[in-house]
Image (tube, rainbow, N blue to C red; front, side, top):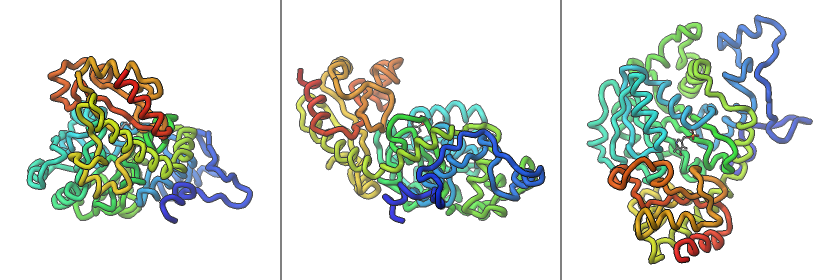
Length: 423
Ligand SMILES: *Cc1c(COP(=O)(O)O)cnc(C)c1O
């Protein structure tokens, strides 16, 4: 099946008389005839459902759909994007290990890595997303277990050179993990450029309607854990907490990583999505290609309008010729650079606040990547504890406005922005 068809049909094929839509299996538990039948499930000898904290048929069908869209071998859904990035790293790194990450990542992920996971004994080195191969290689240590970055970073809108990061990670025998939230597999499939694991905050474009918080991890099946067995003993030696199973032996390179994350981490941390939320995600993904095309074309029109407006100081959007990331955008995001645009208004913080107050159609919200246009002035919201100098150092200047362009008629959006800039 081609991509657009997979959005509708991958992961679930009803037999005669069964529901056409993915059923919502709103049940914590599943019944068996004998204790022996159930024992086989616990030993990972048979596959089946027993408790929704580990696996649920609705969530699995939607995970299989996303797996097909990314071109992976296995996938799992989680209760949030935060849980997805935590699991993705913690599945292969523990106390005493080290991870290299781009600095240009979502603030919540940065805090997870630099504060919370650091407290768990995992050290992170942050590198400039535009660093050279030599600089990236210099950050990797003998105990490094992964390299991490975002395809299109939230909120900086940098486009990562995926091939470069993959090449350096692989030269050092570690996987490259990519948070593909802003691009979605419709705009970029990181596995084609050498990424090994993809994560998502499905809360954003994949759901698309600001309906449910969720996350996902997809494995390409390409990373050879057995080749670097001394680095990844959790995957290549027996798991005492799961009846001595060796994940790569039993589930192959295509299934080991996701099975381990489900059997160990989901069992112990329980970051499980509600079946209803998984169903909403599956419904959202049906229209992903239509929505992303519209987000991209609307955002480009709004970005062009802003760029030509005398009240606007600067615009950042990789789809605009002349943008710092235009060339990388052309290579990795040929269908468009998503719906998020950032810009500054002349007059700094005060002018930005006045602009925000005058908007009518664009709603002020911390959310992004929604069908409805939303807008945020970080200096007066998420970053309001910082002074102007601190904001500039964090790459979020006092004048910066993040506009997540929705799928409304672009003329209405431009009219709203225009009146807020001019009145
Ligand atoms: C929002 C976001 C997250 C966190 O996801 P939640 O679903 O809010 O937990 C992680 N990465 C990126 C790129 C995001 O935009």
